View 1 (tube, one colour):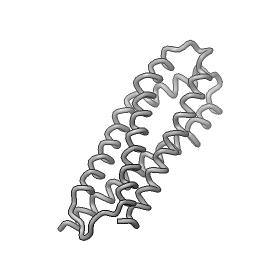
View 2: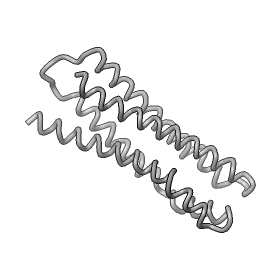
View 3: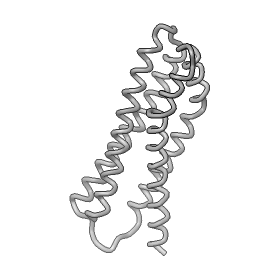
Length: 156
């Protein structure tokens, strides 16, 4: 029964992380460039991005909660052998990267996003650059987190 719980938690954990990563890749590499090319004016692009992003932060944070809860659930399940120091290091690294990524997302959502929405049209390119760098940092953190997860499975 514990093995079934482990498989369910692990699958949910991996799928939620993959969904977050995939949504960020799609947004950065497909959606924003295509929308920028489609809309005739920067103001139309900004209006579309604002409309698209409305309410998304809660869906992302819900997914982050699923990642955290399933990861914590996996830690609580009993194992046959004791955890190695290398495994513990991977888990600490994953936890720190996840915390950094969620913190960065919250900073962008509650600090930078309102500033972007209320900014003068001339400031739009500056905000677009900031958000692009934040997206790249988030992608790197989530990718590194995934890599540590794969490595940790082989270290336990």
